[in-house]
Image (cartoon, rainbow, N blue to C red; front, side):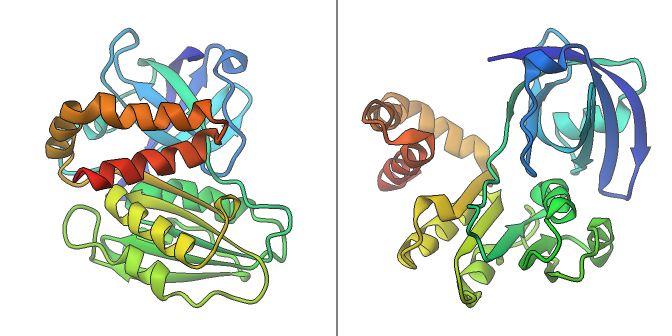
Amino acid sequence: MPFSHATVVETAQLSGRLRRIVLEVDEPEALAIAPGGDSAVGVYFCADGDEGRNYSVRRHDGALITLDVVLHAHGPGTAWASSTVAGDRVRLDHARSWYRPRPDTDWQLLACDLSGLPAAARIVEELPAGARATLLVEVAAPEDLDYLPRRADVAVVPRVGTGNGHAESTLARAVCAFAPLPGSGYCWFAGEAAESRAVRKHLRGLGWTIDQYDVTGYWRRDSETWDARFEEVRDEVLAVYGRALDAGKGDKLAFEEFDDACERIGL
């Protein structure tokens, strides 16, 4: 996987829950940062270590990338984002993105919790003029909504105080309750993994084809329990993913078959 080291050049506190970190990438061509609205990179806090987290690229300008990191009560990502200063070094890899609406898309449904807020903000900001979009966003408090850019052609539907690891999420239910608009739709979702699974099932049930949605689990509730169980069945479920790729089904469909296999065995 291509990687590059980078240097922290600037930090700023955007709000009580968001901290901005600007990095200068040593070898941006080698890292090959994806251009999509939800472009992301893996950030390893010790330049030569393996402790890291994935973060959305809020802005990308040549060798400079801006990360807006959501701060939690604890965790290595929050510890790093809260304490890093100009001159600190990190390692970056796994540059990728998922957001890919079809050219014939008439309207978009965007949905995220706090973990997807920076990506959603960039997607909204970069929408072409006249695009029709609705953003369902699940946040901890009303002030979190101030982070989002305002667009006359984007309707923001907030859900405040649910999900985000503090209460039961209602984001998948909001997606399922959304009445599709006329024409060809597209859905982008970034949130908790179980919620993403429910959204994916709903869209398939509507008859949507796989190129009409990009649904990604950005984090997982009770991840330690899930990880321990996954280790017990790793070979079995990864074999499902590998067979799908070997059959030429592509990474997206291969992941869906992998996730279905995980669900069948209780993951």
